[in-house]
Image (cartoon, rainbow, N blue to C red):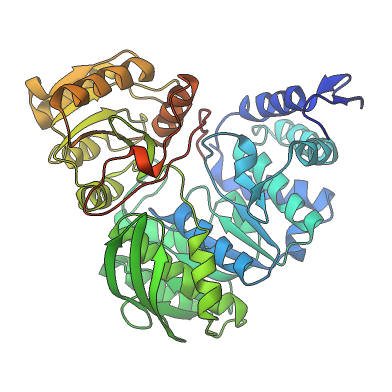
Length: 490
């Protein structure tokens, strides 16, 4: 359908596709975040049952962990698609449009498909809302609604494999109504203190909730406390585990134009000199985990080696918006969605390797439920100056609180305060320009922040970023993307 065509059904009379999409977005995101965690699986199951249980028709690769879930999920999907399969990809949050969360064959759900899907799903959502309210519970949260939309969309499209990223945790997550025959565990660390109990073992126990009886488990390197929980959970459910370090490893990696060249050893084969167009040692680890997961998915639980050409094509097409992503040039602006100390640690290891900056000016905002002390302490060694701000999110940490901690972590003279993201970007870019060649801007601390920064820079109608306009660092050239909208938390 053309962009300006009218929708004439009872739900959206005489409005354009874009207007209809905005109305659906507004309805979904007016819903509260998940709070009643113990009952959300019941609500999602009830809604899906009214729709014929579409999740039961899906072959699912289920992905959880603390960091790297989205990048790993995107690489799994790209490799599966390169193998000739029809794919679904469910990730969160989004940077530009809600439809990014529900992708089919590598593309966000089209507007007209979203509208048709909403018309079909909305009656079930409203019926479950009514029943929950009658029982004294809440309406379905926005993530619960999106999960119902996603499973229904993938069943309707008859995808061969659906790659499903959890929203939070695993056992109680809305996505856990699906039966993942492959469970992928990225590195686990402390996060979401209000959700998990029992320290790292508690985190691991919750995330292991996606391991189904008889499933195959692919696990990145884990701390001993988490590994013990994973081992016990898999044994209890008769699941086989393929471990980084024992069954698979990154044998070699080197920086290359636009990313890195890696040699990956899996349980089935060794793949030499594969170009991964993403930066950082953590992305090499994510690529390894993704490749091992695809081998197991295509081998029905037993690792099956892939054609090297398929592997090369799959990784070449992989993207990870908001992860060490160049979002502007002159001076270079890099956005990274790291939002916990573990993610910041990975960012700090990789920033200089990827971009070779001599000085870094930070734009920093954090959500209120995150470990802002750990985030700022982790950023302190890599930032020459920090411009502290807050996003438009209702969950954003107060600027005064963030600024006070930034001064404690970095010193008074290294911190500036800006009232909003647009002002913070302008101040940071001015400071970077004043420092001269080799200085860049890092936008980090919140996925929401990266989304707003991308939107702001796009709105300024800046010149397109190309490899030719970006500074060269150790022979590395970097591409770019633009366009954004405030992402919503999962």
